[in-house]
Image (tube, rainbow, N blue to C red):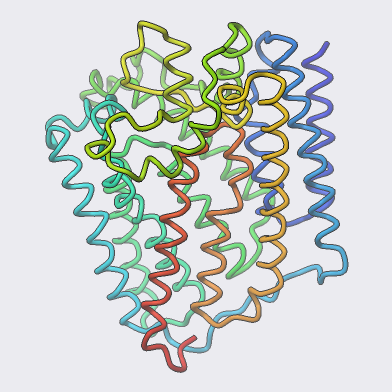
Length: 422
């Protein structure tokens, strides 16, 4: 009965979300996407009353977010002005982006070398948490391929091209480079998230993406994520295409439907008492310090949670992601931690909605480079509230800060000699 009531309430929340704002890439849509996909197992399996109560709170928070989003848009024009610059995309823009692409490419090559070379790539992906421990700085450099590729794509939409076919072929090559750099990371979110971000850029720079296309595309990405998850779990066994049908976890792995619940089940099945008092949140800053300099630096929320869940069987080969509620419990206990989680989540939601309204107000007032920058920046920020439901605070922060900084630096480099082109 409880799952049915929650399901009905979720449907109401989704209806309110779309009724309050037709834009399918508003922050509220990303929040409700996480709430629906990563918590779907709450309707399929039995969970404790505490978990149901937390999920109810998350649904109600989403409803409030929809109301705040609708209020922030009141009095605004119903649609954005989308247009392309009359200027041709400067060739030096693309030259600079290709030169910057060398940074993540060389970083990934060095990462592969340090973890055993191409011959050990499959094993390195399965053991990525343990084998890449202490190589966080390399991981940050590898992730720079994402904003570079997004800027490349954005320029293609915002500017005219003298030879469009050749231009887009060049971008196609860059997209293949992105795939070659991203796939060895073993992160489905990093690879498939790029597709979502490209849709966000297309939505705001060219024309609105229709809901039916977004639903079909989202379903395709979900199935692809399930397939890649099964492949990742069986990398050591898959030698050819015939082996795909005999994977241990099946051709599709649907564990992502419970990503938001596994950590809650852990902390509510057994009492966690080794409170971290904010240390896991501080890892958002301390993780930038190399472990060689500070070997005993604070452990992230995922490490603390996984050690608690596995006990003496903890191997360090993989870590769970705690989500904001569980991570807050790990730090401040059950009552105070839950209050902290919802207060922090509410603050993030307010900031995201504020940034969203700024995007809508300013995107049509900026030149080509400025529009691409604002939209690319929004693409990285819009999903923060949704990611907090299932992700690790430090991981989200560490991924976000270098991306924002790098986007700003690249745009500054492009503007140094910018005259009449944007």
